[in-house]
Amino acid sequence: MGALSGAASTSEFISLADSVYSKRGRGSGFPPMRMFLLHSSIDPEEITSVAQIDDKFSVNILKRIGADLIEFEISRNWGGKTQETSSFMMKCARGWLILYPGEDASLVRGVLYRLQPLVTPVRFYSQDFITLTRKLSGCNERFEIKEALLREPEKSHRLQKRGRRRGPLTPSKGITIDKLASLVESQNAWIQRMRYFIYEGGTSHGWVDMSVDRDGEAEMYDGHLSVAIRCLLENSFGLAVTNLKYWMTRQPSKEPDKRAIPARIKFKKKLDENNVQEIIECMESLANMHCTVAHSGNPYLLLNLLDSVDGSSFDLYASGQDIYLVPVQQVTPNSYMRTTEALFETLNEGALVNEP
Figure (spheres, rainbow, N blue to C red):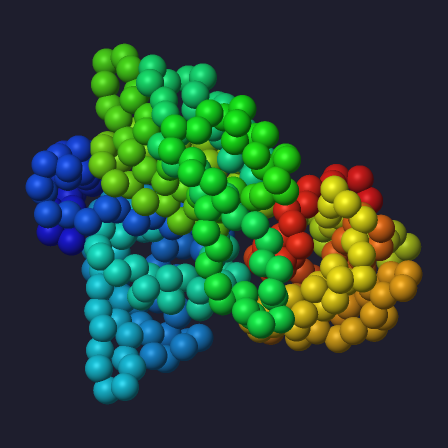
């Protein structure tokens, strides 16, 4: 991790990153900076507990670089070989940020996956991207949508088992926010990733070229980390926290005479028989999700779901244009969100509804 490891404080780390990545396009030799946006209630040192979950992985704290930044090392033993890399974990105003200035981030992803739900990936929906884009375009001296990647639901779910990546619906370089919103609405597409160029005027004159994925992964190609955090990431975390609060309130009631508040997802069209079958196949193929079909449709679908990642237990009820996720026992936002994302990829992106 070279120059970044030499920082003695968070501010110095950000300054070093600014210096390195603002020159990256002129042959600095650094790959793009990978970032992982996380909801987390644990202290950074607790990521070392991954060895208790999967003994092929280990995490060691290399250095605390200030009150809100650490450098840590990841090791993975597989087939008699050991892979190692190091990364950084930074506390932001509304969440945690993993910063990985290396080529292959698979070890980082592996650790974060195993630590769920202690850490939960931030997730965005299409309307979040549209809201974020409008906000960014109005508060920066120069702003450009460099690319918008939209995807369609996967129709051949039974054959693909959610393994195939979907391509862009349309060439999207230089797309406007109004055109983007129109595409999402008219083609029933959902936004997978946005790439922005931001120039922040004033005394700093900083800039950044980076992308943000709906699964909470970002990539900074060039520019200033300080601008990325101040302009893009803090706004992104703000939207993600709103979604997190929605899922946190969908829990069983602690009062015995009061019913639980279900999550409600509303789709644009009525769910037909094919959709019902797609929902069943989607839940049966979702990793670490145990699915029991209690009622297979006509006039409604009822599934009992148990998430073996964290023990979340809830029912899925589908009828008309709606899917309800009804908590049976304690349910983590992580379980709710990955279930919802699987549904969106299979059917279409629905809308979260506050009213039951």
